[in-house]
Image (cartoon, rainbow, N blue to C red; front, top):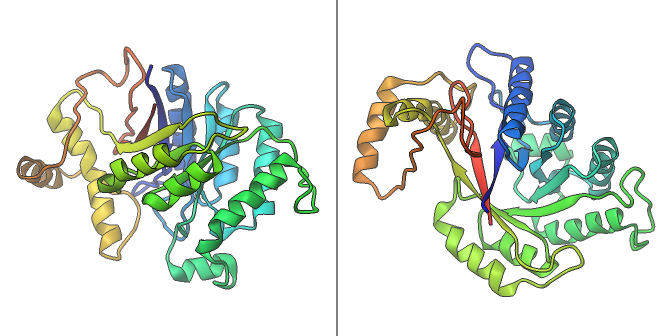
Length: 303
């Protein structure tokens, strides 16, 4: 059985507020839970007026408090931005509040530009190449194995499901070596998906946490009654992507018919694969990606 999850960037729409975005996230999480989604993750980004999930652990607490059974977590925490002990304490607290429901996805990207990263860390001495050591230090705090000489309180003994995130083969190699589940960001790096999963499965070493490889892959999904409506909804994200790539990020714009038409024309000339679900989002017969009013979040599929 295929299990589905949702990755939410908690977008702030043009004319909207952060408070509204956080309320929307809680509402979407409740809907995802009601139709059988397994997980609801939020991502760490900083210095972006169009994303409201910078204080990721706080947002996770907000989502978990609004739901009852769905697993809630990070997709992900950008570990180079933080001391591992701080993350152990934050997620240990989340586990104490919501036992058995908290996931910790870890990435090594900054989730921002270098200027914002410097403001976050005060210096740029934190080395992304130290990511494997930071992950193992974090594992040690949760295991309370005495290797660090520090007891994380909260944190020690917490039942956290830890994932390694990646958009290249680096994360696949690390997840395989540590025997951890692996989530690949194919919603923005689809070309590397097959190679990363092949490496992860080939090199996987069983651990006390995981006996065999376990993978989750992210996809951008826009669900609507018709192809034209789905193209229109997708145009909000397309506008955000263009704004980001051209150095003008901002709040999420409303759907644009002109953008949708141009996108549809390009799709007919490209090798991009589109998956169209002709099913009512209001009354799904089985778990499927739930749309926002302007754009659907990235959906993850695990197998």
